[in-house]
Image (cartoon, rainbow, N blue to C red; front, side, top):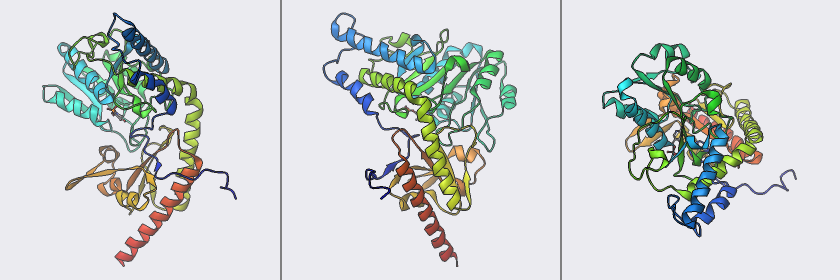
Length: 394
Ligand SMILES: *Cc1c(COP(=O)(O)O)cnc(C)c1O
């Protein structure tokens, strides 16, 4: 009776919105003409084909800038946030080499940040990697103490992609400003999910990507505050004010712009709806199952994120048992060895606890019916897996 008016669920239910988000159909609509009739090179200044795509790129630049409180001239298009992180970190290191050789980051950063820092270490830079507490936060006093006269850059993410924890970026920015150090933030997971204003926060550089906010894959941006100029890591025709050469991905950029415009209009309502779904999933699981632990702060985190350790149940096994949902686990198997999440490990979790964790990432297109279904199936599967392992032990 109750469900008669509801459409049937489609499986698997997509709950991996921190890995990527589906393309919003409105974004696709905006992009389509730029795959067909509007194919001009945005750098062609001598004819209509270039003028129309150049105008479309500038519109998108404004839409993205508007969402983050920047001015359009401060947006540099890239191929995605991995490139933006590389440009921000390696580009700043090169441009400011004469001022010092020290960079500060944190243990829970994305690999694009950590590995960019590691690459610089091989070129003589010194990297300080701040630990986090069991909630996932860096300690601001530790940050203050880590800054030396050699420090040129602090890179700390706005929102974590595994545990959704929001670092105190305003406080970090204030410390950096006071000490005359540039502040870069990987803001991928914050974009479109929580209010995020670079000017209010006081950031110098921020990495963004389209495919985590219902835009297309392969296009991103680096916010570069006016007056800051990282050295390019891709040289060529001098596009993007010399910071990133290469013919612009016009359809992608148009889609990124439209995705930001939608986010700006809908973020306030959407984040409440998504947080409600997340809380529902969390409450259902906590009510029906013992021995669960939520990873990361429950106070300051992204609305759609739930990262849970299911004690004595392996995450990969649980995912296999509930094939009707698409989520991520806290450990990945690569050929012969298991790779436990460096984020969960840095919170102090054991290998076993990390291995028993799942990340649920709820997004724009998830429904209450999906959440109810998944919650019930996970409860059922955890109970039966625990029962099996109990029998095996007896
Ligand atoms: C997805 C992600 C990236 C990488 O972005 P791409 O556009 O896929 O290169 C970087 N940082 C964070 C926090 C992410 O979630």
